[in-house]
Length: 161
Image (cartoon, rainbow, N blue to C red; front, side, top):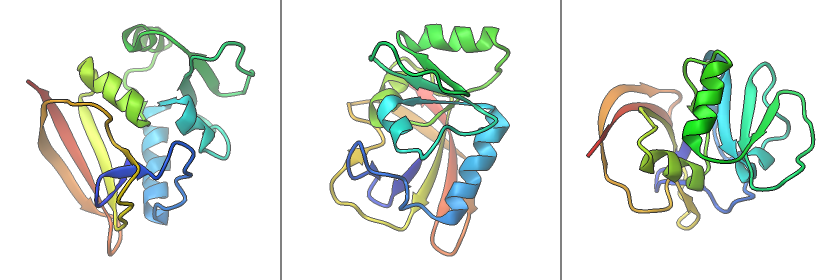
């Protein structure tokens, strides 16, 4: 996830990720290709210009009768069941790409093992946070990489209480 210096992922649910740096976008492409699958909520999916090519786009939605789109798997239900299905499909690891609701749901169920955050030199003041409810987890810094003069990527191990 890309976040502002004040911890926001977007100004609102329809806000495009056009505020992130070119280096963040490059990092995002690399990591999603490495994982081969990205899960996200429907609102997050709608902020993409198109599904990510050569990756499985798993989109959580409550809406019935979603359009068939190449590379997109529409899902509903419990995250654990979706993860089991992806495992049966041969995926060993899955990247969670947001938004706030889905991030929180996966954290509450202790399904997130690592957080990868790009901190961009922006402040929104108001908007959507990385999570939208009270959580309690400790983080252990695994990596810290500067990706340009003003932005960096942090990779954390999640330790649930």
